[in-house]
Length: 394
Image: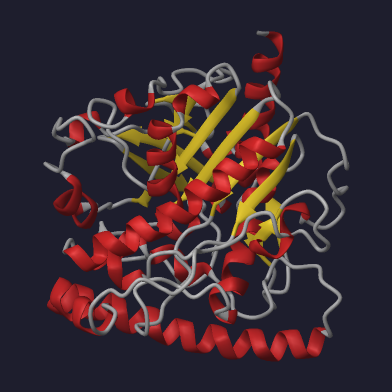
């Protein structure tokens, strides 16, 4: 699972995000983007080949941060300052406002509030945690807000904090240094979440979402801040990280989303095409323990199909209202419907149909982790609208 957990990095398109509509010179954006794509493609191919041929140890030796963990100086981000947020109300060029061509931007006033945690975007080995001023990881994080959190911005003002995320290599080990890196990242997110809760009006609906490392931290936030969310949670999208219904959900006090439109519940999925080989996930996750000591087992892995909104659901490709597909020059994306079907099987989401070419970042085992959100972007957008409507009725 460690390699998978960091894999979302490879959907990041460098200094000029592919889905961006910024006031950036197109030629400059294209040149910078193509150079980054070339380098990242080489990195991905090399990493995938090494993982297939020689296994975990090669990846560890090339990716784990150098030296021992050292806590960064200072007290961490000041979340009263707007520059510590990738997205929040009032920020100019908020990436969560991105829309495909021809679609209107979100309204300035929306009924809900979303807290979104981006996945790992720091690839370097210089630190166990990303420096807040690292330009590359910041730009990649903005892209994730753009391509993932934008699905929630029709109904919610999105808050997405910058945080001293654990480096990619921290997910390849389970030693004390890696644990300290994760704890530091979580400490930042706890402070950001506290600021979010203190700022938004009391009693108004909340949507939570994350991916990969972001989903890991979100699962812990749900467990530790459950009382503050009671009666306010529309749904929690804990995507790209395995969730045990027996070992993880009880700590959150929340049920799995068993049906479309249900509110106050948790969704989770991990996308694979067939023939699927999820052994990297299972080997690292199966048998670990949840907050109360219960063992995590494959039979208890949560899979909510984003096309049906139900636990263990199945849906044909024709029912998919829209996948985000990059344009030929990777400068934008369009929504393509009816191409990707999905069904939950043995805890994983298996995709089928005429799957469009989303890029070169499908991982070994036909793991579509990188594309967990973009495969179902329009479906997620509609799903959260239904759940908010249910919350409002209640």
